[in-house]
Image (cartoon, rainbow, N blue to C red; front, side, top):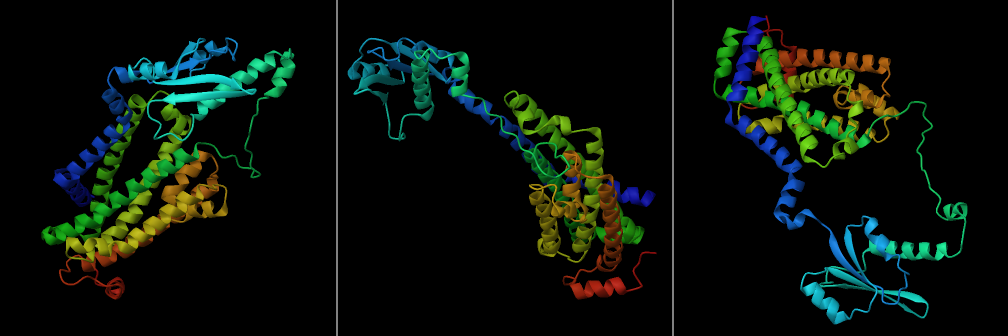
Length: 416
């Protein structure tokens, strides 16, 4: 146990001393802070004049077609400050007002052959194809309301002309899906990043130490099994801290930098419970252990850092397939395929926590998922440690699959 913690603590210290690790994490944190502050940055460039996005709009109704109800426009909160004129204003006068900055746009209302004609005047229409739809709808509805009031209809008759519609979604499955699916998919992506990239560092760490000959010292002072598990634990602790810091900074920025209510609209915080947190941490640990042991295996089969990516290719494919199996089946979380994804050991770490979050995972499914994942970890650990102990001091050509099979069958594995 002492040797295990010695290797783990050495790994933790080594990770935090790497400039590339510190710089990359600092860049990620800066990108998060800047990303969440983009709206504030843009508004600061606008200056004091840009604090208000209200457009001054001149509305000319010289024939009193709207019979004095255009004053209602300023109570509709359309993003315009409407200046109502009931006297005739010429095009040249409007042009002068726009050039002087008194107004930005203008609308001239006229009636020709019982047809309401509206002329929308702007300084530059090269980027416009038609009058803004919001203005079209507003003036149309306002005129319609004016004509309806002249019919002396009762309140019930007026209400029947514009009934309120309520649309509901209901499924035939007995299980009720809870939570924001978008938020669930986003959190699944975060969990995949945490597991995959933390596990990937195990492979890179082992190969780097082989190059610097540190591994020879480790092998002579402790067992290969202790090295594998110690490095896995050490990098896992670093990765866990790394994820906690990133998520914490992101949540703080989302809360204090985004407009009020945006965070709650995207992420239903009521679904984030202590139980979900415990299960998420457990699946992070087990998922990380699964992929870290696989990467420990691939890292020990190469002797040069530039060969790591090629050696890790098969594991990367398994990880991506597992993630997408989980990610896309969430669109239909009550399907048999999603249930399979929550039990399949290479996708369950990304899938099951959010089936729990949605309230559709049964206790038996959770128990089976844990059991399958634990058995898988034991099998992978047995294979990885066996091959690792035989391949770790190989400084020649890359170990092939045939070589790995021979190593696994070998009885002289340096484990005892």
